[in-house]
Length: 132
Image (cartoon, rainbow, N blue to C red):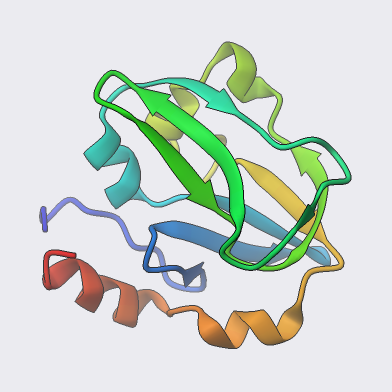
């Protein structure tokens, strides 16, 4: 793991390298710094439809980069309340600010119990340290 790898405290993480931040009753979801770093320059994001019902760890969207296309999984079950439409014109926002302007979707009615299945920053950092 790079010394510059960012794993902010206070977020929830999946082993598939998505993060979740609970904000105003919504679950904001994005790709981790590690994920965007591994993908390289992101060139396209196929976001889900508004109102789509997602299952925890079900396919949420697809991110394409200069290296590959990757499925992104929903860290929590819930309904898509908002998508980051700025990514349509500027998918590089994920590379530039993956925990801020590069968020992917906001879920409403999400499964609170699902949060217990996710990792905190320390556990996620440990996962990255194992090279997974």
